[in-house]
Length: 535
Image (tube, rainbow, N blue to C red):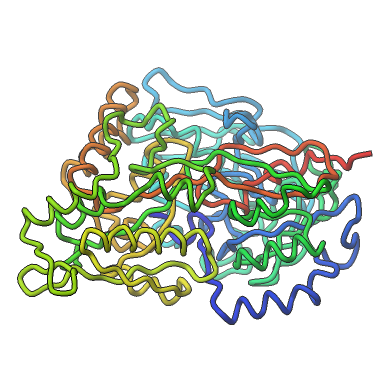
């Protein structure tokens, strides 16, 4: 599952945050961008997002999937998710044994403080992340790296322990300046809230739980952005985000399908749909007497009506999910789809000894088939998924009580109680499946939230990670997906398309295929540095 720093971990909304957001509508957003370029200015954009990062330091996990705005990686991704050079001048030179990657660096690049970017900054960034003392929960994603070294000022060489097929995709990771970050404690220094990078924007101000404001970097090596002030307003409640967009406080926002539909007739706004790997699932903790029971897991997997969720909750903006890999992906294992089969779910429970009690709730050995299901406050999609899941489960004789809370409330309960969670990464099957299912990561923040443990899955995950052979990797991830049918430690529900409603006053907007962490580094503003005001 998604670690707190990995995908810009979410802080829950809660009643207090909702009230605060409403109050900020009038106060903070009359000029959300700050001291110049107010609402409606041609060179200013203010967008509403749902999630907030805990840090702005790549050394601690920020921006690891690219598009961080403040920083650049050696590589970046274009609109079609193909790798292209950024701080490197070309894609890496790869040795025949696929254990050595050499990057030639772009010359003349400076950090926003005017200091030059060199190979030393790259070595510092990767070496610091891999240091055991650094509190970066995503460092396991660089497990293949044996050594990183500079060859002069303009080249960097990575030596790998094993031929990790998607390594180049890992090098979209942002590069930080050694001359600043190297003089601070990596875990507690102020670089986490006052970062300096080579990217198209500089941080202007970060008001926690309110906004992150950026200003254009006039010396950006790719050319100064035409949008001079860009602000991300942190609005965790879906309804509040829609209200502020309608009132004119926002230029754009991510919205659930039903709220996005409310802007369909607004001729001044345009809706953008991004295909995603973003899924919603229910964690089924292994240590819980009910959710850890294999028959209950398998029954829930059949009892859930995924297609109804896509139709009624997502208004068709998504598809049924049977695992972390979307059905349209070349990595999806055909034949692992699970149809809605309530009769089959009841049969599994009957055969396992889970018998209906007087109130219709099943029991076995004195244990009622009942458990709580937590979802994030203010997140309408999670709430709707949770309620639909509980309704489907009840028909099979399983009693689920839905409860909302902030992550601060939910996180301590994750080992024993179910959570309506989310995840997904489009880069490579290793990116999401390893952290979601690897038994050794159970209890590691938001990784493996279900404490899932399956020896066959563990071996397949390692085989997929360590092989450079596409056929071997495909077979490994086929094994993972088939094992999830036999032992579903999570109930996967839907893959969700992301909907964004934006004022139609700029040219150059588009979307990429997006991960779970939507809105911060994704959305139509993934390339805001290339937007131009309409004439």
